[in-house]
Amino acid sequence: MIQVSGLTWRNIQRIGLFDSGVGGLSVLRSLVSRLDHSAEKEFVYIGDTLRCPYGDRPDKQVNSYVKQLTSWLLQHNIDAIVMACNTSAAAGKDELVAYSPVPVLDLLDPTAAFITQRGIKKVGVIATAATAKKKAFTSTIKSIDPGVHVTEVGCPLLVPIVEGGKADSEEAQEALRPYVQQLIENEVEAIVYGCTHYPFLDSALKTVLQQLSYPALIIDPADCLATAISGKSVSTLHWQTDSFSSTKFATTGDGETFARVASRCLKQNIGPVASVSMSELADSFVIRKLQKPAALPTPIQLASEAVS
Ligand code: DGL
Image (spheres, rainbow, N blue to C red):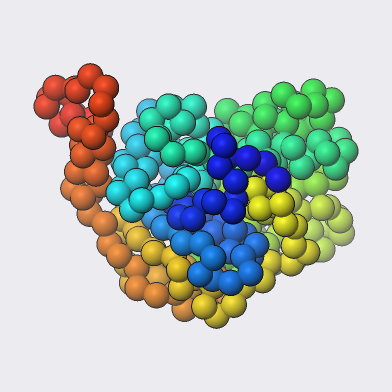
């Protein structure tokens, strides 16, 4: 079991997660799958659907969105933050660690640990264009074992399919096929979901692999993180009808649309989803800055950072 800056899984009570949209729900469900009962922990989830996708945006912009989302989560008394968005971890995990007063977790490190411990030597990663361009998984894996061969492929077509509620469609299979073919050409033993949206494409990916007669181990980084922090591994993800009753859901987009797509992803109806406006997010960021004891920025600096 990994320790989170002195905290253990047992004494993390309230966890905040963010993503550009519904993708981070794959991380939420992996964490929930480790609970014996739903009241054991509370979760606060925010999806920045209005500004999704993040995968084609510059780092500076992603980092500033992430600080706003984190500031909003911090107003909900969380004990730890999970970057349930690999694009944001690739863009600036260190920056968020420096910004956040609570421990920050990401999926890159536990995934790299899992791959190297399993002795996998040829791995394929499907990820957003930004994550793949930066070779975020490649460098994290190679920092542990330089001998692992990593093929990282940017897949810009996939996030809109998941956000559009079409994860189980033929369109999803068509979109996946050329990406998978690139991995097959590199003879990968395992395929990593390098974007948190992609575990929802699991049945489409399995169909494509079957059609191409290519067996490969599929690795969900959300599962690697959940196992690493809870010390519990599960053979299949399982959750109850009330598993998400201790989760507060929010989106910067339309609450009803988010609830519909999220319910489809989680295979059950989730409760109401709060809509968070851009001005509420920007205010959280300003409040957070004002709460910090460090040298206060000028009102002009605050205003320009809040809108950037
Ligand atoms: N789900 C996110 C990730 O893991 C972001 C996807 C996007 O917005 O492009 O990278």
